Amino acid sequence: MCPNAPVLPPRNAPYTALVTFRLAAPWAARRRRTYGTGRHGNPAGRALTWVLVGALPAGLALAACGTGPRHPAQAGRPAAPSLPPAASSPARPADLKRLVLGLGDLPPGFVARPLTSRNLPSDLTGCAGLQQLTGDSIGRHEQAEFFRPPIGPWIDEAVIAPASRPAASGSAAGGSAAGVSAAGGALAGPPPA
Amino acid sequence: MTLALAPAPAPASAASAAGREAHAYRATGALGGIPLEMDIVLTRVGGVVLLLTNTSLGGTADPALTATAVRAAAARAARA
Image (cartoon, rainbow over all chains, first blue to last red; front, side, top):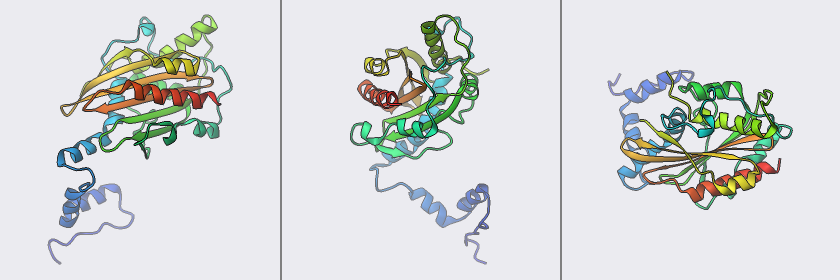
């Protein structure tokens, strides 16, 4: 057997096997090195494009756990978020899809990007405050992401139907302010321990 | 990578379109030496919460674009 012949993984091989295959097969490595050329101009631009692919989810997760100042309305409040009672009935799932931004809502030049498990707000990890928010209060949601080639900007949107509706404290107006501020405060919460 | 997060003025168009308060933040930092800016806007419209971000690498996040997107998102949500 030729020593350089690629060893094909079984059809049902796990992803790790595919990675091994790519690393072991010279032709696959060559293809990987040239992947992404031709459309985005110079090498620096291509590199930046690939960096940007993973920048937004990571950026938002880090921003959510940022060390910047907390919102003034959040000062003195516990980190646990509590969304306010909804002003109207929560939207049904079909409604949520209809409420998400479309390309036509944005200036020309944007393209839709497929969502992944790393898109916000679902499946974010590493930030205790945000995980608490997503675990306790975020129910159904629809998301969309748009990108203006070649290097952005990115527009991400999540339309969320809150799952939990704890009793509002104080007046209706105060409860509304506290609830939304708490959700925002989770974004500006302290870094995880 | 560390991003600093600070409250920022919420786009007035978002507050007016939503008819509710909106909370906005500006995140700044660097990714691989490239400056990163992210506008984060959180608002509630009726029974839904909108979380919208505008991220720019290598430049400043365009507040006009943020406002445009938030206004459109709030307008859509208001139809519910």
